[in-house]
Length: 168
Image 1 (spheres, helix red, strand yellow):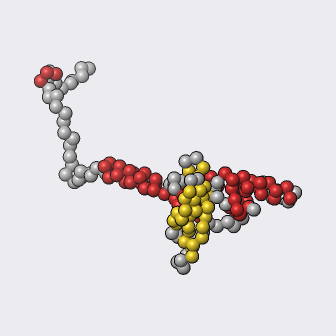
Image 2 (cartoon, one colour):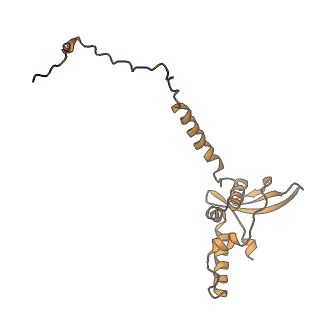
Image 3 (cartoon, helix red, strand yellow):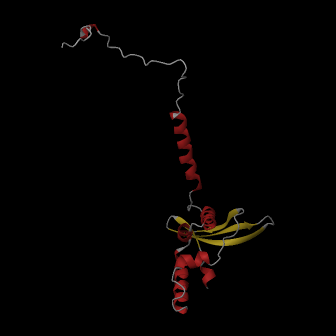
């Protein structure tokens, strides 16, 4: 049995141009969303950096600390405290654990933030005084014009919340 194949033109006579895909009249061409989705992704990435904690100025450091406490970001809030404040909290936690006979665990972060400490309401925050490695920020409490002061200390290249007076 002999196979019958259609005769093809020699290779040099065939067109090298690619064929255009067959378009079906009932299907509209799809719009390209690649550019739009790239812009959306870029916008999301840029906006996610807007809420990052800042520690370069005393007022920004206090805002970052206050915001972290409100959102329950204990580790960020703990790291926003001055080294002296953390040491005092660790010492107090250790004292409480020993005095309780072990019924209270020695967990300073948990003790400090679960004890009911709440930062001042985040109203207007201004630097009232800045001298060298220390600063005082004034935090407006509510709408009544009442302000409270918060001491800040500079440790290295970042500002930290100093609450050591609370442990005395």
